[in-house]
Structure formats: structure tokens, C-alpha cells
Picture 1 (cartoon, chains in turn orange, red):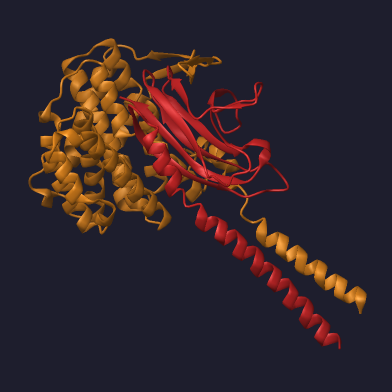
Picture 2 (tube, rainbow over the protein chains, first blue to last red):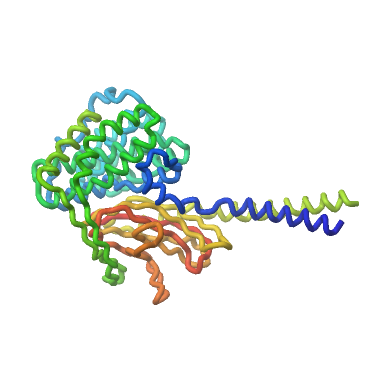
Length: 300
Length: 154
């Protein structure tokens, strides 16, 4: 009997260890999956898609780059906030919401809080339709926008609201909306860069247009992996001319170990790497034209 | 008699399981990351928050626990990375940025292993636009929880 009892106890212990160890890191193969995303026979895990969604640059970064390059604020390039009924389906609305979020990033970085009120109102209407309005405290945000002294708090609250909403959508398995919001945000950022570069084609702005290559490839991979849905297949088709233009751009990265230094007690790593962008002939102008065309097709 | 012994054994097993589960859920409740998030916001200074990561790593006898996330950095921008520890952590959380998921090249870290020194934050002056990996782990492969913040200078 003792032996039998020992066996049962051992079995229970094994089950117990099995249960506690099943939460291991499933991300080991994420990079491989992402690298192979363009192969249609590769099944992509939800984890890989989540990682892709999370890795897109925020609209704040794009706006800071534009501001640092010495460009003035232009309200002309923002999406019109009137006639929101042009966004019919929940997919259209999710994409528009992302784009309005992109505009909010641009408005916030230039501290044009008086313009923000209309954009907050548009985001509010779209988020109510998508049933994700609980992530935004619109009363407080509009109050902050009316008082230009609270622009930092408005920026932070906008970022937090979009982050929480995106996290919720992914956790609830509503990845399709999450992807479209990210796509809308990216497209609006790429449009703003292109619009400004169209007027001021400096080396800096040329490079900023060309470096969208990685984002276009990533968004294309996501759209293709979801192309069983007609809406996503159609978006992938619309993105294709831009993708083909970006295929002509070559980005060479020379990675070097960073230099570590302490500045006023702060630890700073100085990147010593180098990026060389090869975009021959008129390709950057073609990229600008195609990006503007795509954004206006989808958002106007 | 036999049945009674089996019954006691099974009861004992599930009681232990319940106790373990209760202890871990109590710890998890304590570690929502909300307090750490509040602390992090006050340390951002002129940097603008981009994303926060709620980290909770359990001890793993097979390998030091860690969690990684893809992150996009843009050349010409200065980024700040802040690891904020839960007060009950035995060892401090280390936040690092690597070239790839295989930890190919380190681009920045909050822990100087040679000097055994932890920093409350670190900055990266980025010169290369691309997708990289943020890793979270605890010194000595310990378990623990906290929040990681990623921000950009305006």
C-alpha cells in the first residue's frame, strides 16, 4: 500500500509541476515568425501579431521629428472633423480613430490645444460607436484643451487613453480593431511627414519619408496575414503600390556598440550606429505622392 | 482504511495547492503596477511617455525569468527607459534594450554588471531607426514585479 500511495503522490506532484510550468515564455519563436511573415504558408501566432502592433512608433515621435526639423504647425494637413458619417463600418471607424489619434499627437506636440477640442469631439463620437469610450475621460481632456496651461497633462492623458484602449482590445481578442487603429495612426503620421516633405524636400525629410519602409512592410505583413477578411485583403491591395515603391529603397544599417557615459548622474548610451538610405532618382517624390494619395483615399 | 488514507492524501494535496494559489494571488493583488506607474510619471521630467509595461515574473527553476517586447526607435530622438520596482522585490528589476531577441548587441541597460550598479533610468541617443527589443529581468534571475516606462524627449 505504501508503494501505491507513493506512486499516486508522485503522480500528483508531476501534475502539479506540469500545471505550474505551463506559463513559460512562448515568445521564443516570435522573431522567427515575424521574419517569415511574408510566406503565406506560415501560421502566425496571436503573440507575433500583438508584438507587431505594439512595435509601431507613436504619433508623438513622428511629430517631435517634424518639429525638430524646423517645420511650422499646419492645420491644413489635419483630417477634417466634419461629416464623420463618411466612416460607415466599425472597421472604417477604427481606422479613422487611429488617424485622429495621430493628429492629436501632432496637435499636442505643437501645443495647439485650441485645435484639439474638435479632434477630441471626433474621437469621442467614434469611440462611442466602437464602445470603447470608457478609456477616455473626455470631460477632463476637453477642459485641459481649453486651458492651454494643461497641455502636458492632456498629452499624457491622450497617450494613456490610447494605450489602455489598445491593450484592452488585444486582451479581448479584438485584434482586428487594434490593427486598424494602429494602421490609421501610422498612415496619418506618414501622411504628415509626406505632406511636409512635399513642400520642403530637405535631406532630413527625404530620409524620414524613406525610413517609413520598415513600417510599410510590417503593416503589409499584418494585413496579408488577416486577408481572409475582405476588408483587410482590400487594404493590402490598396497598400501594394506603396509597398512596391518602398521595395526600390535600400536601407543599409551599420550597427556599432554604443558608448556609455554618465551626464549629471544620468546614464546615457550614445548610439554609434549608422544608417545609409539608398533611394535613387525620383523615388522619394513618388513615395510622397503615393502616401498622400492612399491617405486621402481612405480618410477624406 | 486504504480509502481513508487516499482521501487524506488527496485532501492534503489540494489544500497545499489552494494555499500556494492563495499566496500567489495575494502577491499578484499587491502588484498591479499602479503605484509604480505613479512613481514613474513623476520621474519623466521633460520626456513624454510612450508606453508602459506591467511586469510580473515568477521564479522559474529551469531558466532565469525574463519578458521581452518589440520596440520601435527613431534616429535623431533621445529616449528614456525607467524600471520602477515594487517595494517587495528581493532584487532589482533590470531593463535593457537589445538589437534582437537573441540579445545580439546591447543598446542600453539600467544595470552595470561590472560595477554591480543599478541606475534609476537610462537614456539612448538614437542614431538608427528600427525595431529593437526591450528585456525585463531581475538581478540573479529572481522573481519580482514592477513597471517599465519608455519615453521620448520633446
